[in-house]
Length: 359
Image (cartoon, rainbow, N blue to C red; front, side, top):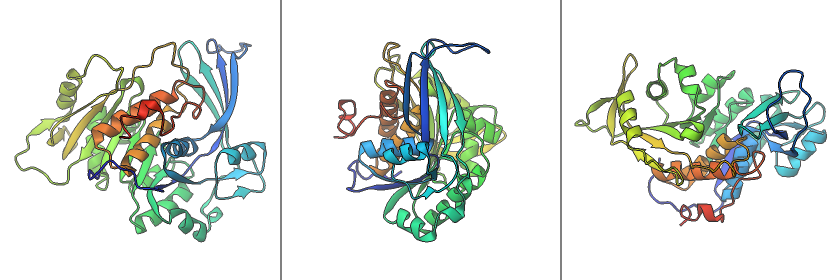
């Protein structure tokens, strides 16, 4: 990451390619059992989709997002277009949508997703439109969906030296080709081990840096347990000690402050991190805590990961230090969780909870 300053250049453009849809959110007292008939306690229709949510977050934080996606000329499509500017509308088919059941008791959410049809293909994105979208872009974000089109976008971004951030939510078709082109990766908790088959998350992160030599950092988000980040160090210190990554992670965990009302970040020095059976990489390990939300204020976790990624995109554009970036992203994600749906709770740049980061 660049560490020159924390000021955000005007009109910073972020281009995203991926899912934009509609979420139908029903809150229930408890999750239904098979063959149950229950009533919702609240209901909301709101824009959704990983890319749509993350870019909405960046817009509220002050960036200028552009989205490459596909919707149909149907009711859902018109609702999506009402919230987002997209490249074009398909004349036939159905737009993507998701039914989301929010359990008031556990604060968990269950998603039933219906993909759009027909899916977006590279031919749906004229080269002139792609070049226009990427013109002046500071960073490109890919959520792992629409992989064929996303790969075209990624290759063009590489040609133009535009850095790429990949959302590795889970194993997806075509993700391996995309992730090889990434500069930054943000993973869901289970992805690193699923992708590398390593025995621990920390070993898996070492493995990812070794397999993906272009990656500057990789973050594994852990929900209420915060996140782990591994940052590659280009200038290796010959005198740096070799440390077993699992032991280093354990030592950092022991340094956590007992209070997580305010997100904190704990980091190691630049170290040669070793993962047994995998290899060694010169890097720096970070642990970020999540912001504690009182049960009475925790409404819905839908889209918390997208909010975290939107904040990371902002932090990269604003040249935040990693410690500041992780605390900022945790604060934005926590704010989102205080409202129903992926977008209602997303904070604006002027929100008081972000004041200390925007100075």
